[in-house]
Image 1: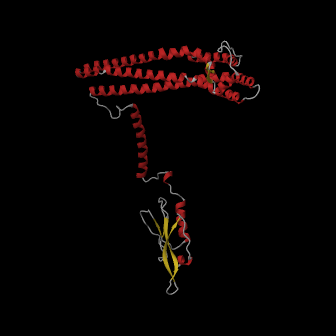
Image 2: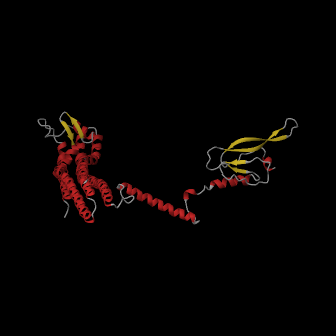
Image 3: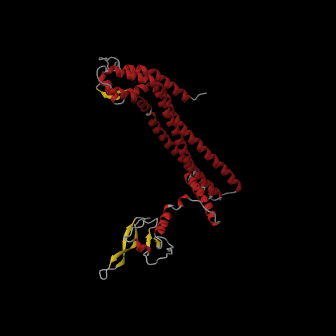
Length: 386
C-alpha cells in the first residue's frame, strides 16, 4: 500500500498538470477593461512579466505567473501540510516527553526496590527522586526547542515549490523577451503555451521531489539532534546513579556522545602509531613515501665532483660536516648549498691577477653567487687542474 504522502503528492502533480495549459492561455487573452482580473494583459505588460521571470507589479496589481501555475498543486497539499506541522508535530513532541518521562520514572522505581532489598541508604534514594523533575524539565525544553526548529524549517521548505517552477520556466521567459518587431505578441504567446505544454509534467514533478528531499533531510537532522540531547540526559543519570550505588564511573563513560566518539577515533590512531613503533624497534623497514630524498640533489653533487676533480665539498646545514678527500689541497673549497636552505650558494674560486712588480700572475680569491647545483666558470681553467 502506498503511503498517504505519496498519494497526495501524485494527486497534486496531476491537478497542476491539468490546469497548466488553461492558466497559460488566460495570460494572453483579450484585455477586459471592465474587470482586468478576468482578462489578459497588453503585449507590453506581458513582456514586462517575462523580463522579470514571471513576477511583475503594475497599476493593476501583482502578477505572479509561477505562483499561478503552482496554485492547483498547493490547493491539494496545503490541508495535509497544515495538519502535519500545526497539529501533528506538537502532539508527537508531547508524546515523546510523556514516554521518556515514564521510562525514567520506571527505571527509578526499579533501582529503588533493589536498593531497599540490599539495604542502601534512603537519603540517597530521596536525592535521586528529587532529580526526576529536573530530567523531565530538560526533556520538555528539548521538545519545545525542536518543535520551534521544525516549525521554522517547514516554512522555509514550503517556499521551495514556486522557485523550482520559476527555474523551469526561465527558458520560455528569455525567449519571449528576445522577440521584437511586428507580430511579437503572437510569437510570445506561442512560445509560452508551447513551453508549458511540453514541460508541465516534469517541472511539477521536480518541484514536489525537491521538497520531499528537503523534508527527509529535516527528519534526519531532528532525529540526530534529539538523540544527542537524550544522550546528555542519559549521561547525567548514569553519573548520579553510579555514584549512589558505589560503582564509580568508568573512565570515558560519562563523556558526551561526541567526545566519546572522538576518543574512539584518537585511540584508533594511537594504535596505528604503536604498530609502526614496534616495527622500528624490531629493526624492520617502515615505508614512507614522504621521507624519500629528492633524486636530483645527489645527482647534482655528483656532477660537481665529476666536473672538478680534486675539489673539496662541504654541505652547509649537514650535522656531520664530513669533507670529501681530494688530491689537490691548494684549491679553495666549493660549498654546495643544502636542499633545505634558501640562501644562494657562495663559492670561492681562484682568479688570476697580474703582479705589477714582476709581471707574474698571482692567485686571489673572489666570491661569486652561484645557482644551486651549478659550478661557476673560471677565467683560467688550468688553475683548477693544478
